[in-house]
Image (cartoon, rainbow, N blue to C red; front, side, top):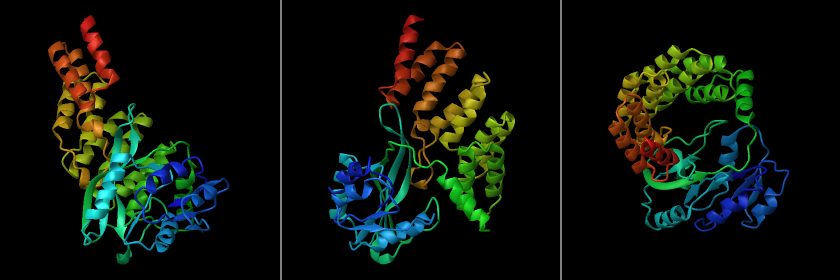
Length: 348
């Protein structure tokens, strides 16, 4: 782990880690709080690393201190639920030593009931002797080489405080100021940072530059089309937004997330028949969890169902509205929206 000023979450994470890890290595990058005191309660393998705006260097330094057969990384605000701890313990006993990298789900957003709503696979454990190295100053990654194992083990990223919101953009712009040419992956994430900072015109240019890259990863290109659409909405260019969503179809069969985006575009303009077409498309798209794409799980069932309920009601078909509301309830039994709709239908 690499950490900085994480005294409020580190113990929460390490209470999980101590149940499955053979050694715990903490690399502190300049904490000014009690992070190091907390870490010392769990391990004597505590190291200092002078922060240099390069996450891969820090992570590679942390891996260099490891002595076990496999290295696993976590962030301080990650949590491993009990069922996943048990799965990791079982994995340690049964893992085929020919596996180079173990992939685990990363849950980074959650619904009102605490269930994951946004997930994607990350390289979580790597075989130490194969010298897998991190790459990239920001949004660092380990290239996927060797034999991969995809598991259903999940790591929950549960923030309790806001980190430096400007850090990522600052690192990217420092790279550019030094004359570095961003590779396609870096260009994609730089464009995302511009969007998050509401620099929509700059983000449009950055996304378009990324989309012109021949070597850009297809999943990133699909995401770029989606976020480009969001930029155009913010700039009040609604037709451009729709064009951006539709451009994603040139790369692969539609993703449910984009189907929902297109459907919402029509629904917001009271074009319910068109919205129904795209929400029904979303219902038919299979979820490909191992593609590496960012997945909004609700787009693969719940959102299309609950929105189809509304569309059919607006078109005067109560029976279909009720049908889709109940289907939404199958996907999310505790949904407040589903229950509100049931009460509404009873009143009508």
